[in-house]
Length: 307
Image (cartoon, rainbow, N blue to C red):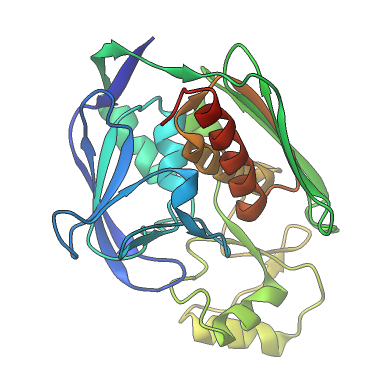
C-alpha cells in the first residue's frame, strides 16, 4: 500500500474543551514521509510539534503535546480521524493551544476527508513491526494495554467504569473497516456528578451539552438539573433512557465504549506511525495509552525502525 495524504486543506474552528479558547485549525496535505506534525502559527514559523509519544507532556483528561515552547492540547480526535481514514501525512496548523472539540467526536473531520477522498503518494507505507509483545499495566486502576505483532492493525477494547448505566462495553475496529460511521461519530462522555467539580476547577471551560454525552449514574434533584440548565443557557434538562441526560441521542448502545476506542486509536498513532499490531486494552485511558505508545516507540527505536 502506498502512503496517502489529503486532497486539499480543511479548516475547523471552535472552542477547546478544557481551555474554552477558540482556535482555528487547518489540516493540510503533506509530502510523503512527513508524518503528522502540528505548527503553532500564533507562535511562529518554527513552532513545530511532531506527533509522537515522547512529545506527550500531559494526559490529564486529554493528550497534550509539547516541543520547546509550543504546546497543543486534545490532539487525540484529529489523530484518530487521520488514522481511521488512512492518511499517512498531514500538516496541522493551529493558532491557539487546544484543538477544537467540535461535537466531541471525530465526525466533522471524517466527513470532510471522506467527501474528497485521499491522494496516493509515490512512496510505500512503512508498517512498523514489533519483535515481541508489549504490555503495560496500572495495578491501581486495573487498566492494561497489550500490543502484539500481527499482520495488520486492529484494536479490541473493554471499558468498565463500574457504572450501572454504562455496564461493561466492548468495541473493535481493524484497518479496512468503516471507521467513519462506526467509530468516528462517537462522542466523548462525562458523568453528571463530575461536571460540577470540573466546572468548579476550571477543567472544562469549553464543555457543554452539545459536545458530550452526560451519564447520570446517581439520583439528581430538580435543583441540580435547573442549575445545570442555567449554567449552560439551555431549556430544562431531564434524565431519560435509563440514565442519560436528554441533551443527545446515542448513536449506538455502546457509543461511550466506541469513543474510548476512538481515543486509543489516536493515542497509539503517537507510537511512530502505522503499527502492524493487535492492540487489546482493558479500561483504556490517555495515561495508560501513552505508556503503551512510549513502550512501543522504545522497542521500535531499539530495532532501528524509528530514529
